[in-house]
Structures are given as C-alpha cells and as structure tokens.
Image (cartoon, rainbow, N blue to C red):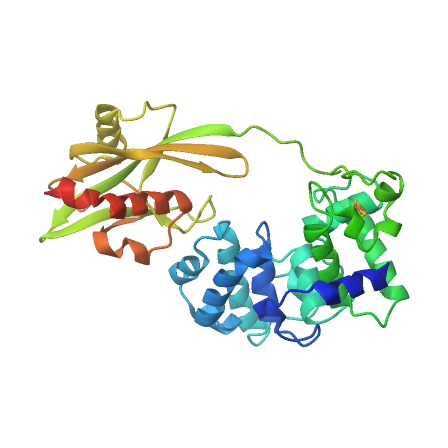
Length: 372
Ligand code: SF4
C-alpha cells in the first residue's frame, strides 16, 4: 500500500509555495504556517493568505517582533483567530528557547502554544522528513473506510490505531520518504476519498480498502465517523456603528474583543447579545444603546441584518448606524475601545461580520449621509 500512496502523490502533488523543496529540506517555518492555515480550509484557498503572511513575516523572529494587531490583520479572512495568536506566542518562545528556529523534536514542538499532535506530525514529517504520522480529518476518513470502522478525530484511541498503522508502514519501508507518505495520505483523503462520492475507481489503495472490497458495485462508500448534521442554535445581537464628528472629522467607535474569548483580540463594531430584536426597530435600538453603552444617540438608522455561521451557532445581528453628539471621553462604556477616523477602519483586523458592516458603510456612503 505504501508504494501506491507514494506513486500517487508523486504524480499528483500540487506545487504550493510551502513545497518548494523536497521533504527534509523544506523550511519548517513555512510548513508550520501552512499547516495551521490549512486546518479547516482547502490548501488552494490558503495560498494568497500564506503569501501575504510570508512576505510580511518571513521568520519566527519577525512574527515575535510584530505586534498583535499586525499578526491579526495578516490572518484576517482565515477565521479561528486564536490560531494566529498562538503562532505569535509560539514564535516568541522559539526566539527565547530555540534561537528563533522551529524546533525539530516532537517534545519541543508539543510544548509550544497551539501545536498539537497533528501540527507536530505535519512539521516533523513534511519539513524534517521524520517518520511521524500527520493525522488530519482527511486521514481519519480515509482510514475509516480502509478499515471499515467509524473512526473519529475526537477519539484518542482511534488516532492511536491509525498512528500505529502508519508507523508500521513506515518502519517496514525505510526507503520511502515519510514526508511524501504524510502528504499523500492527507491528499488522498481530501481529493479521492472525499466525504461524499469518493472516487473509488481511481483510488490507488482500493485493493487495501475493506469498504471497497465489501461492496463490489463500487457505489459511493459511506462516510463513517462523520458527525450528524446538527441544526445551529441562533444567537441574536444588536450592533452599532456609532458615528460622531470631531474637529470636522468623522469618527467611528471600534471595540476590541476580549482576549481569550471568541474572536479574541480582533476589533469590531460594538454589539450586544439580546433575546430577540425585530429588525428595523430603531427606537428599541436607541434605547439599548443608551442603557447598555451609556451613550446618547441622536439619529438612528437600520443598516441591515447580518448572518454568520460559526461551528456551534448562527449569529443573527441587526446593526444600526447611530449618530452621537457631545461624546464624553468616558463613553461609550466598553472595556477597550477607541474613536477611529472613518477612513482608517480598514487598518484594523475585523471579524467577518464586521467586514460585512464596514462594506455596507463604504458601499452606501452611509456615514456621509447620516452625519450631514
Ligand atoms: S477505495 Fe474508495 S472508500 Fe476505499 S479508500 Fe479508496 S476512495 Fe476511499
């Protein structure tokens, strides 16, 4: 089986920018960044984000020296911002403990923030060509079908079983590149043994696949180990674009999300959780702003409803543009916030929902109309 995986990967490997050298000669820093970016995202999608990041921060030392806002801004669009903050923290530790290098042992890697079993395996196999399995969701699905057993990535015993199998293959075939096999198994899971409609007729390991061999009709194999689709719970928010004019300049109030929480460290427009708010209820929105944010608002206008799905819930937000006069320096009430010139919002790292709101402002020139 291992030869088939290796041959298939040699014939099908895509030339991504972090693959510019053979396994064992790749820059572990680039491999690390690519692996973290690629979690929950297709590799092809990662490329522009990766290039932007590497151009700005070409080494762990450069990451360590960058401030948090810059790191978040460079991560913008990838989601899961805690990962960017973990890279920042890990890079600082690499400078302190590893002379600014990505370390090359499992123990050292696992001691760094945000680097778990999968990422360590990816770095060690792909960059250092060590016989360490890199088991992502694609590999779990592939093995589920090979063994016709519903493995899941959440069960350590399942990961251990797959890990043992891959180590056994590598130990029995020391001439085969571990990096090539790690890459090949992940790519096979993603491109051939897909969640739905796996391409069994073109699968190089079908003769080793219990699911395929037990079903001579080659109908699409089931997707063992997948979690049943859950309907998302809905969380309602009311959001505000607070606008004031100071010294002839329009300013908008941006707040920073609390670190350690969801979207921690990112900036955005203030938003408050509410039970439910009928869309376009400007008087209720004005009252909530005055009561919760302690800011006196004048003209209020409904900007629109934003919908954003996260892994466990759907956020429904009605956002209002509210003009504030006579702003007191102590208001609005928020842990960390600042009045930002309207034209500088694009310099801040924003979440997807806040990007949608910023785009609305630009598209409709809402601030102009409202402030005049
Ligand atoms: S034969 Fe089909 S089910 Fe089996 S590993 Fe290949 S693609 Fe997946």
